[in-house]
Amino acid sequence: MAAQFDRRLRKAAVTTTVAAVVVAALSASQAPDVTADGNGRQTTADNAPTSDPSSQESATGNSPYYTDLPPLNSPLPSPTTGTPPARGSAEAGIPATVLDAYKQAESELRRSKPGCNLPWQLLAAIGKVESGQARGGRVDAAGTTIGRIIGPQLDGNGFALIKDTDNGVYDGNSSYDNAVGPMQFIPSTWAWAGRDGNGDGKEDPNNVYDAALAAGHYLCRNGWDLSVQADLNRAILSYNNSQDYLNTVLSWLEHYRRGIQEIPDGTGSLPVGRSDDPDLGISPSPGRTGAHTGSQAPGTVKPSPDPSPSKPPASGKPTDPGRPSTKPPTDPAPPTENPTPIPTPTDTVHHLENAGSTGLTAVAGDTFAKKLSARAETKAGKAVGKVRVRFTVLGDTDATFTGGEKVAAVITDASGVAVAPALVAGEQTGEFTVRATVIGRTVPGLDYKATVTERVADALARTTATELTCTPGGEFADPVQVKATLKGAVADKVAVTATLIKSAADPTENDKGPYFKGADGKTVRTLSGLKTDAKGLLTLPKLYADQAEGSYVLRLTTAGGAHLDVTLKVAKAAEPTPDPSTETPTAPEA
Figure 1 (cartoon, one colour):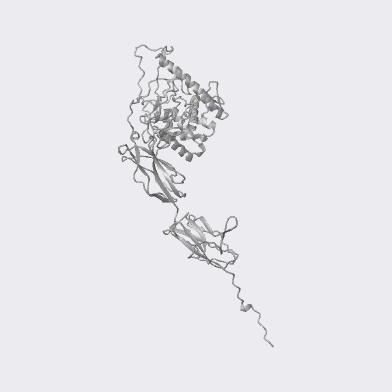
Figure 2 (cartoon, one colour):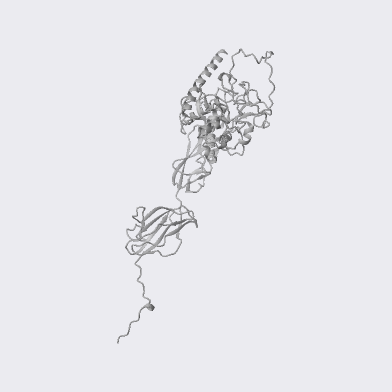
């Protein structure tokens, strides 16, 4: 027991030293209203929490949080698909599904609240201190935690007093509220902040996709801009109103910004330091009266709906609350975990197979007729269901999945197949790659080749029948306008090439006759890169003529083989014919 006590004292000393170093480094890069006090703890200019005064409760009810600080060295960047994870601290790594949830939440907030400037690293920092990244990434393929993560009951005994608001639906406690899920929302906050982040029609605080999106919206309220340090501080303090909490989150935020290591689900380590550990000497948050080591830690099994009254000590002797204990504190019991966890479906995946996605070709702007599909299999070739597969569009292309995203995560069905959303071709033509990978499992990725071809037209026609004529050295008064169609329908954004050729039988570019002018004013007889508009129309630039008279041919061609020859005539203006009625009669000869 003495050895355990000494070990705890050493840990506390080391933690305090590391905290001072990290926070001192952070304070040098923060806004002017953030400084460091004599103990190395970061404080605001007035040395008081700066949470929004209109917010009477935090997201977590100011529940305990993990106080472990990041390692001094940044983790290596995420390994590329098909390579083993880089060697590093699992403590600093982020499990794949949890990381995916943070990034998806950031993407959604970038669209819905662009002025907030929410970085996914902030969600990761909060997820780290609240639940150790969902207990090291113990989540299923849908992102739901394996077992609920429930904090201590907020009964006023060492914590804020929040009586039951959800009838025990989320926390299993019908007397008091508890913080729940990987982002540790209290039920009363979840009631308005909850979001459906994975599109299953439910708002579940125990699902990391739902919880991450809800946390993002919570942090982005009140018009805060998280790229501004003062607003960032306010948002973090509104989540858990503690200066030590702010310092810890900022430490992890800075760490994750320097790079992260993606690790398989379920392999992350659970932090051990907790803010309600009396050995750490952390000041209680507003609403907390001090440490309460008998409370349930985040990550433990859920409490009984109606906690029973405390029992007297086994010795039968009452304790004296006014007399300090002479026994050294003991380590809190670790979370109840199976020493040999049952493999999840993700753990059994050996490789991905193409489930029939071939011939992936589409015209620019169109949706690919075939969807990408991948089958997750064990080493023996058995299909694996309930596995999350990520499809990522790679390469120099503007193709996306439906909705404009370049990344889509899909769960395999009972036959082990995951079908990606429809792939939509952009305007950029050429070949690109879509890669399928298993989220939470480092196995070789599966690549699909896709091709975007040019828009085509099968017919071109002039919009008017006006004869196109010009005098030598002059300019054509009427412009050349054409309409492109494909099977009778408008063919928009079709590339057209216009060339002045020698004759219908000789498509060689002519060296005399009509011409266009380039940007520099010089003669140009071939124009490429022209495109029809949304109505399939194209109006060519003005045409000019040199001194050579004759009949000439302007040929227009498109991708798909459509072409049109337009006749241009260059001739001198005809001499005016005298009007007999205006001529003076000649006098007869005498």
